[in-house]
Image 1 (cartoon, one colour):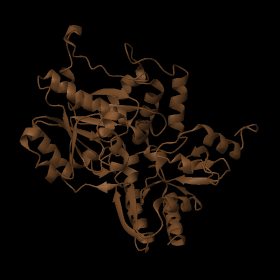
Image 2 (image 1 turned 180 degrees about the horizontal axis):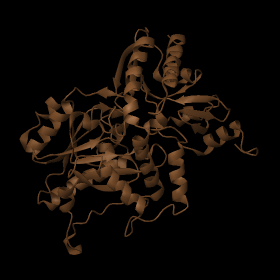
Image 3 (image 1 turned 135 degrees about the horizontal axis):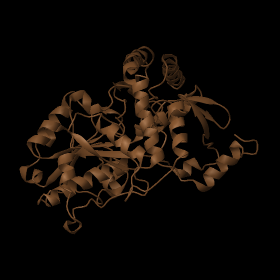
Length: 427
């Protein structure tokens, strides 16, 4: 930081005076005895605070960072794009990076499946796009009554009004459950199959986080559930929307979670890791058949009237292109398989037998550690583990370990041992 930069204490005071943080009880945050952690720099999997202390980024900066902070290829792509243009409108214009990124994303899926890309800003807006497309398609197909959605208990699909109405976590969603999309929640595929036929005739789409529900505490779906769901949706002429905002870009061990069960949905929402964790950008992909339903003259009023000021932002698209190129040049998914195995071994060796651990789950490179209900809370353990050089956040009493995919074996062992030390000291 520059010599004349504010001190850590000054920054903390200004933060408490002016900022409002997400998912945070600000009375506790602004309490005199709370010292917010001020992150000032990052390199690789390491973050540095305003006091010069270093930490492993144990949750990939809220599940976004893929190849590490300050990756030279992404840095260079953004700088090169800055020399050309930082932003131009996607409404009435286009730009090379958006065009090339759309082509690259389409090529990640089987030929002639998800051929159209609509860019937006974040996971919530990617979900909103998919839902509005699904509703408008039914209207254009002379079935306006099909505006209902089915989602799953404990689901999280974002916080904008429409996306929140799809969510199934009472703490996060009950205040706004009467706003947004008309949605029924089910607990399982078996319960979905019990939904009355008359309700299915009003339904446009089912939405799910494939393989694993993030905000539910990293709850795993049974093996084969996704492929069974896809077959059920096809049999009932109901769209399948996959929320791969968290699971996409290698988190589950494959580029996308749906590939593990050979499922291609009608819509897929991507965000978080799309730019490697650098810039806000999201994409909703869908099929040519759905896209073609929106074609017509201006008088037909078939246009998808939805958009964002920063749609197809060139800087974000440049970062995303570089992100995808790194997957190829560094063989990220290939090298990740050994790390997934190592993570499983480290969790079993250092955490599984601790008395304050109730259960451990793993899906690819995502680990969830459930704390025993009669011990220290997840928030307390995450605060304690800072002292051992690891940063992460809990979901209630579940500790999540989801580092950038670039973490080295030694760094991964350091992260798990940091959790071990904190848990031993707070047992």
